[in-house]
Amino acid sequence: MASDAFIARSPDTKPVLVDVSGVWPGEPLPAWSRAVPGQRFEPPAARGIERRPVLLGVNAASSKAKLVEFAISQGLSPAVAEAMTRQELPARVVQPYHRADLGVVASWVPVREGVTPHGERHGHSTLLNGLGTPVRLRDDRMGHASPGMRRGDMQRRYTHIAKEWRAQLRKDLQEVWEQALAERAWFSMHSPVAALDDLLMPFREGKRKPLVPFSADAEVVALAAGED
Image 1 (cartoon, rainbow, N blue to C red):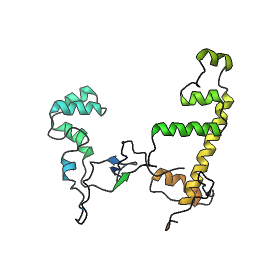
Image 2: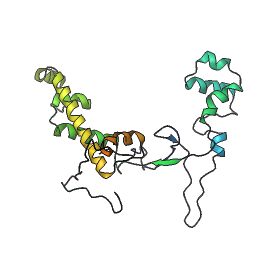
Image 3: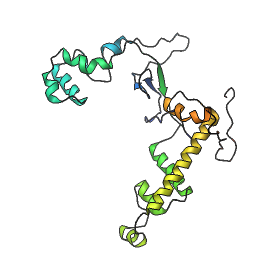
Image 4: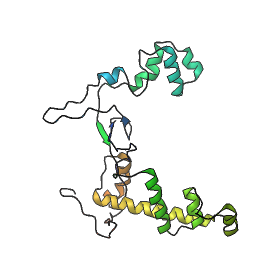
């Protein structure tokens, strides 16, 4: 189903702190220290982040050579970067990353514990099988050949992927997406993620109806206590 969260790519799936006061999905921030039981927790001061944007590798005290190198990496032409003064460079390429405060923060968390890119490939392959996708098209989409089928065997057994196959697969995948969105709307017709909230608007306006989601064992997925 559609989700408001991200897949954490670290081995231990730690949440990633982000500043969501700007452009979605937020800009990663340095991790906060762990809270100590019994002691009041105070978020770290923004001063250190403002003076030294730790994610950049450069700051106002960096050498001109480092600033020029960073400016070029950000898309500035070498000629323009070299022509700028030592005082102009920080204002052009470092200042935009400064923050007056931490703004609004959030955490990226795993969509589901144990989810990996490889596991997602298995899930997609299973979905294609369930949709009845021709084997030749499924293999092409997954980027591999079926076991035991050498190139010569495939050339004798298949000619090409028919354009009608691709058209049908696009239609099938669109229907899967539409159903997933309708199931997401059953949980809530709003989302803190602007892009998803916009997609849920037809449900709020009554133009589309939510669908009751079912679990893998065909049981209706129940809402947790207190949810609406």
